[in-house]
Length: 273
Image (cartoon, rainbow, N blue to C red; front, side):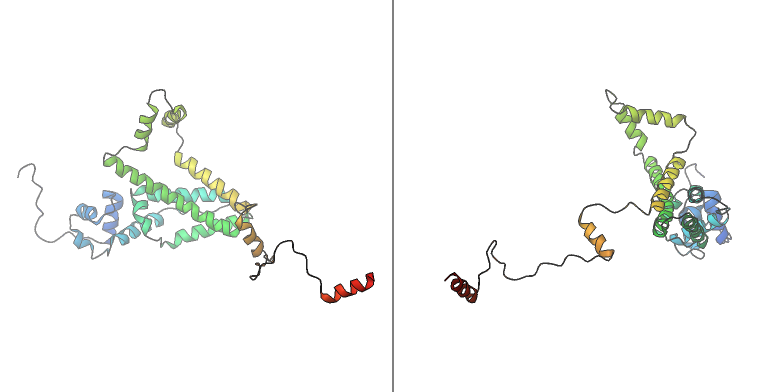
């Protein structure tokens, strides 16, 4: 067989596979969430996998289910809202980081894991117990999940761009800061400092994000604007009467004195006489 020839598939029975084999092929082997990659790892065809997985979305859901249920679920255990939100964010980050592209692929796939919804419920309970506004606590809890999801989906897209040969963010900034006169000294300094630190940019941004959410939820939101068209709507919602609209009809000429009646004129003349 020549070196450039691909090995021929052996004839005979196809390899025995099952649902767990498919999941393990993603987690332990290919790390790719495509049926073609999984089939290649298992030595079979993508068509054979359809006996166990009906669609690509189902494959994503199965892998995510395996990841989140095989790990230790974070519990409040006396944590405040910020600490527990940070722990849940890291729990999701570990799951998304285990399979490159999982966050990206699952953007269009609604989460069906009851365990995750129960953890978010515990986080809301912690916030309400601390006196947070209930609605803002609900929104803040969702925002943590969306931040982590979006972070890893973006990182995956950036890696795909680098694989295609497209310049990344660092390469673009490197060209900008290398311009004559160094027009961006602080940006250049930031990239140099980032190369020497042991801190995680994700940890920093997640904690900053969570701290900001906690402050907004504790204060009940961003507050109402002092002026603007929405102020009247806010007053109406609070039960105050809104000004009645002007009546339509003939407009009276401005600054015209009312005309006195004939009876009043005659009486005034009689009194003068």
